[in-house]
Image (cartoon, rainbow over all chains, first blue to last red; front, side, top):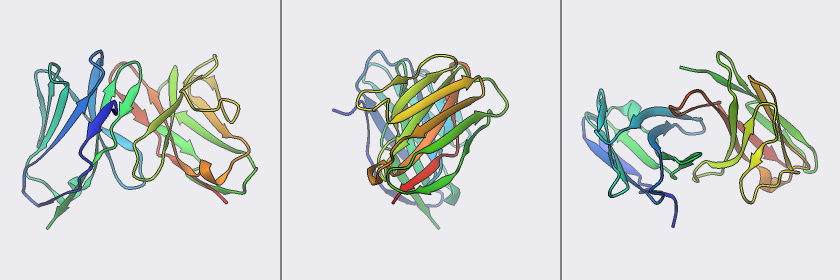
Length: 107
Length: 114
């Protein structure tokens, strides 16, 4: 079983749509959690950290459920510029990356 | 945010030669730097963790004699791919940690071995 699992997608959504990505992790001792965004042939960039209380940054909302070892990312009012691969990342003593979920927003 | 640079951004080399990739933290000191490799449509895989002034810690399955890592200062780490082969062709990305919140990644180096 992979340490971090994500649905690879792609998710094809129209502009303005709301889309949700899910991620599960296997190591219950994981300490911190993140969503990164990676554009094609570019490095990953930190989108947001994820906290158990849930946190929001503009159109992006992240949620962590430690009991279920489940992380989510919600994107509201999708923009064309949101098209990218979203990486679920879990920190144990090192960062473990999921394979990413690809999002394609179309006009 | 913190800035990490990598050089070169892409390189083509012949099989059997060695290639050095530099990773620099431009506006902060990084006691720890990380080297990752990413094959197409796969996740980033950690190769090694590099601490300034000490030997790198390699992940299982990564040959330390093939991938030489040097972290000589708080702002520079280098990865040398020795005796490169076509299967070493990949996207190599470094990152540097500052504090406990995430890591900042370099722009990556695309290596093609012919």
